[in-house]
Every structure is written in C-alpha cells, then in structure tokens.
Amino acid sequence: RVGKNLKIKYMKHKFLIATVLVAFSTSAIAQEVNFGVKAGTNLNTVSAKVDGEKEDDTEMTVGLLVGAFADINFNETFALETGLQFEQKGFKLENTDYGVTVNTTANVNYLTIPVNFRVNVPAGENNFYMLAGPSVGIGLSGKLKAEAKSNGMKVSDSESIEFGDSDDSDLKRVNIGVGFGVGFELACNLGIRVGYDPGVSNLQPKGDSDNFLKFSSTNIALTFKF
Image (tube, rainbow, N blue to C red):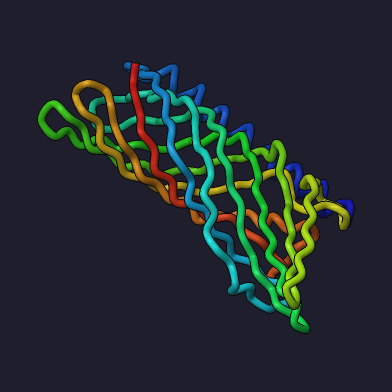
C-alpha cells in the first residue's frame, strides 16, 4: 500500500508540474497577455457512496468564488487562460435511523489553479467565448457540522475538517477537476461567465468505487479585464 500511495503522489506531482510547464511555455510564444479579476458564487452538489450504497439525501450548498486570471492570447481566436482563485465547496446530507434525523453540513475552502483553453467568438465590439480545461484545488480549511433531532430534542456539534490520506482524515487535500464554461465580455471589459466542474477526484480517504465522495459545482461570476 505504501508503494501504491507513493505512486499516486508521484502522478499528482507530475500533473502539477505539467500544468505549470504548459502555462510558462505557451506564454513565451503568445502575442498578448490580458489580466483580470472575477467574483461570484459556487452552487455545490456532491455524489457519494458508502459501502456501495448511493447517498441520495443531499442538498445544494452555496459558496464564494473570487480570483484573478490571465489570458495568454495566441491570436484573436485561441488563448490559454490560467490564474488563481479562492472558492468554497461543500454539501448537505440528511440521514434518518431509528427515529433520529441527522443533518450534516460540510463547508470546504480551496485555493484552485485552473488552466483553460479558450476559444473567442467576436460579436461586434463585444466577445463571446468558451472555456475547457483541468484544475487543481488545494484544501485550505473546512468545517463539519452535525445536528441530530429526535422527539423534539436537538443536539449539535462542529469540528474542523482534517485533510489527509489516513483512516482518521475527513477529506483528501488535493481536488482535481475538469471545468467547462461560456462567457460574454462587453467592449468596456466587463463580463459574465457560467461554468461547470463535474468533479473528478475521489476525496474519500482510502476510498474506492464503493466508497467515494466527489464535489461538483456550477459557478456564476462577473469578470473585469484591465
């Protein structure tokens, strides 16, 4: 198992290195670089299984999304967009056993590096575009809250999320995703974009095909280019 864990970490490191190399190598041949900022919200859902049983009683959570980005333009049509963003993901889950209803809420803060290939479609003085590419999120912190109700009585508790790969950990720290999006920019450099990240990483420590937890999010953000 030690060898397997080392191999997984090695592959993750190779992915990160490749992402950085792509960003820097393409910047050398780009004709123009534009910088911008974005702010919006994540609408988060989760897919999960425990011992082969799918968790269906989940609800959407809403999280913050803020960041900065750079468009590395090859020409008027094609570009590479990368940057750094702070985003919140999470889930709500409800279980009822033996007359006791337990509501669990998780809120997780990530620092994410997206690398998107971008196709621009000019619309007069404005611009429509499409995005697609991978992302790497690093878990910074998180909170897990639980509330149990039974016969009019209520008990609640909360604790910080522990990141890691051990049996005592709550979530794996690295979250790899694949994003898709569309956006529209006005001539004044203001814009809006909508994206979707279906989630790729199994964040369950020691997880497998019968025990997994994956975050998915739909994001809406306003953008401004300098």
